[in-house]
Image (cartoon, rainbow, N blue to C red; front, side, top):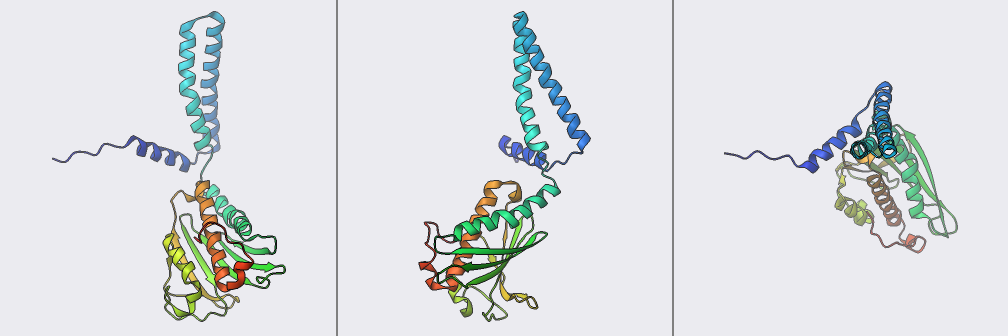
Length: 262
């Protein structure tokens, strides 16, 4: 006779929190809920004040019990329900990550006293095309890289457009024409990225062909600031690795930090 699995309280709590995060209430329901919570807290404070004024221990104890329960619940309601992790918020978080968070992280990763990076970006929904170039008196002056990032809630597609590189119909980490990027690709694969065995095609736009990577993300990736920051930093290390792979002498222009690529 098999034993029934007892629900884990922590797992149940996590599921409740996730359900509340994804809950989208109409405006009238949120206002009503706020009024109810405000009345409960106000009633508890009035009861506490009355008990203190009349020195009635029963009223004080009842008020403290009510407030002890009501205040944490109100904080949960405000933080999770009124946060409204709806479709609109997910779209805003997607645009913010592609248009602001990642470019800023990448620029900080590439900055130095000798050079400055210029990032031009074109955002179209959940896709952003980037053109990275450098200016200043360094060996990186004139170096350019184009790449695209598509963020589909819980999946990332990364395309590196490699002008001047002739790619066969089937590619892998062992492809001879990708030899200079082998260590960068290996780092990406170790981080959970997968490499498409067919090159990406983008003819007619000047981007030519390139390498396509994709990776599954945490289902709640867009509502987790720490996960978004890790992603931006991790991807910036990858892009820096690609730049250095294209120009070996870049190591004299870009001081290497303590972290490894990807």
